[in-house]
Image (cartoon, rainbow, N blue to C red; front, side, top):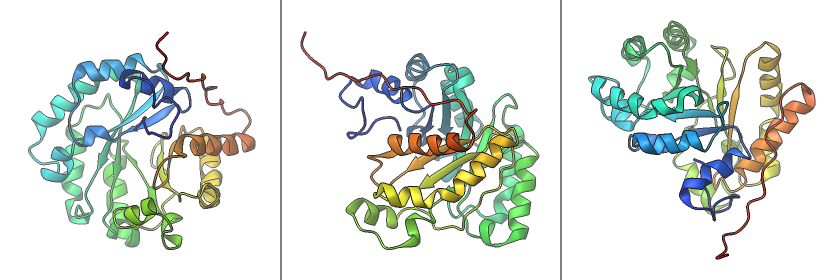
Length: 271
């Protein structure tokens, strides 16, 4: 997502909001594609609003991952990949988010699916079945299948969020919806992707990501190119927090490129 009523640029026309977001952050989760494949013209607009180094991590539609569970989906996948083709180099990874019921017994289906996908693109898989996190054998089976196609395993870190009971309406809502799985910090490829969920209190969010500062700094020193997405239950402070995380990593690794300096967003006027 790149628009929120609390974010700079929300007052702009819808076709300009991504440009405003890209002035704050250099990557975005394409979560709306989970609900429907976008029109190609819409994706052209996304590309026009972002620079060539901007990163989209676009989610496969739920029809592919949740309804058909990666089976008999060739036509749907072809339509989706054609729609997002205008992103070009901005298409950092195709995000395969699988339902919690997709477990170790389904790994051969996932492996076969990834083998059929065009090798010119990168892929990243998010699993939520608990056995992948608690059973080392199941984890190795999944890792082997992913590494065979140079596919990343996306961790969704909710450990800080679930460390104490919710204190706001947004936190109570997220409490019933977000997955509870153990922390995973291993990278399989040169381009790891992390999803981190903090709290609506920015200080608690920062406290919860301290271990990630070590991990991400280590990846950068190894020559990897990580992408980190920072969420909170209401997401009101997410762009500012993402920039704060980047600044904290850069304090440890000064050679890291800074994020863009945001352009001021003026309110709409008649003249």
